[in-house]
Every structure is written in structure tokens, then in C-alpha cells.
Image (cartoon, rainbow, N blue to C red):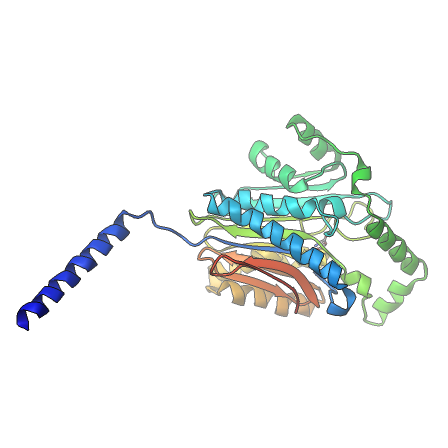
Length: 344
Ligand code: ASP
């Protein structure tokens, strides 16, 4: 009896020793993570046909899986963010790239930004009208220029110098966005919006956004964030929102988190939403969930702004927080499977 007990004990020791050895020899595998959004706003189940809902879900899944495949093939979080956002920019469903909303002048004026959490490098473009994938141009600004934010014609000259072809603005025409502009103009003409605002309401149209964004954590523990948008329907006077503003619509820092925002940009700029979330984590040691809830559900709400953020921290914990009726969003669950959500 004693001998067989001894034998079992020795075998156990051998097994523990060999697995410990095996673990030491394995490259330390980290958890990858990714979250994307397709805009926040008045998205009610009743306002989406089953076909439309399926189209949104399918496109969000395709985008997330494109990012996942980059991460699984040892790509960087920046590559994953760019790959995911390009797919959303190429779809007419979202207010970015192909599906961008119209300005008051009947043109499309696109904004985008990216940030890398390891180097704190960032790049952005604003007010461009001939760029198919503004997220990629933002990345080129980050990697090939000494600047962070380029605008309008200058940004497009820089694009051409770096081999990016300009597209005919007709590329961005979609019937749906054109109709939205006409509707906005009608409301404006009737003075309806002003009356509603004076009475303390905002019209549902005020809350129809559709910006896209992505945040990711790669196997090296590096974070990245990106955001791309057409801005807000009927925007005037060269208005630029939060999406290309580092610290407002986009932020990434490996010490804390990566954030991409969507919503009424003016409020996000005034609160410095994305950087504020990272700062709460850095200085007050809040979790990513607590930090996003403090900024969106308390500060943004108190100021009267609507919208939301997606965020991921350096351990792969995620947050998707919004104070609007809905936010198109998708994330990889702990098993690495895509989960798409739209409503509250
Ligand atoms: N934040 C964007 C802007 O204000 C709009 C949006 O998120 O849909 O330009």
C-alpha cells in the first residue's frame, strides 16, 4: 500500500514538473480583443425592418471578423482597426465613407482618426470630399507626416503625394442620405427645430447618427482605436465634429484603454470624452466600465449630449456605453465569437 502511494506521488510530481516545463517553453499567449460600433442614435426595433436589421447585423459581423482575422494572424491592433473600419466605410449602411451624410451645400465632407496606444502616435483628416477610405488616409497622416490632423484640400494633396487616388464625389451619393438632407432642410425652413429646442426637445433627426469606429487589443498587448464619419446631416460652415479630434472621438494608450465615440460631436469635444475616460482609469483607477459610465451616463447626460462609446482596456475588458436609444455594436466574446447588439 505504502509503495503504491509512493509511486502515485512520484508520478504526480513528474506530471506537474513536465507541464510547468511545457508552459515555460510556450510563448505567452495573450488575449486578443475587439469591439466595433456603427453609430448611436434613435435606433428602435420598430423603426428597422427585419431585412434592414439583418443587413446591419451581417455587415457588423463581417467587419468584426475581418478585424479578428488580422489579430489571429498576429497582426497589430492598428491593422485590425483599419481593416474593420474600411468594411464599414465601403457599406452604404453607415454614415462613413460610401454612406456619408450630406452637408447643407449638398456635398459630403468626411472626417476620420486613428491612434496607436503603444507609441501614442495619432493621425486624422477632416473635411475631405474625395477620399474613399478616410481611415486609411488618417493612418498615412500618422505614419508618413510629422502632423496629427490635416484638413480639406491640403489633406487631399497629401493623399495624392502618398499614392492615394481621389474619387469622384458622386461615389458618395446615396438616395437615402439625400432624402435625409431634404427632410432636415424642410424642418429647418419651418423653424420646427428651433421651436422644439426652445421647448427643451430635440427632434428624432437630431439623434440619427451613424459614425463607425473600432478598438482592438493585439497579442502583444497593444491597443488601437479608430473612428470615421460623414459628420451630421445639413452641417454648415465647415463644421467638424469630434471624430477626427484626438481625445474627443478617439483615444488609445496602452497604460489604460482604447476608445471610439459616436454621437453629437460638439458635446464630445467639450467634454474631451475619449481622453477623459482614459484619465479616469489612469488617475482614479476606475475600471473601463466605470470610466465609460461616469463620462457617458453622468457627464454627457448632465450636459444634454447624446451618444456612446466603445472601449477596451489592456487586459481585454470591454465597455459599450451609450445614453441614446440604441447603438450598432459588435464584439468578440471570451470564446472569440462575434456578438452583435443594436438596441438597449
Ligand atoms: N460624432 C459625429 C459628429 O458629430 C456624428 C456621429 O457620431 O454620428 O460628427
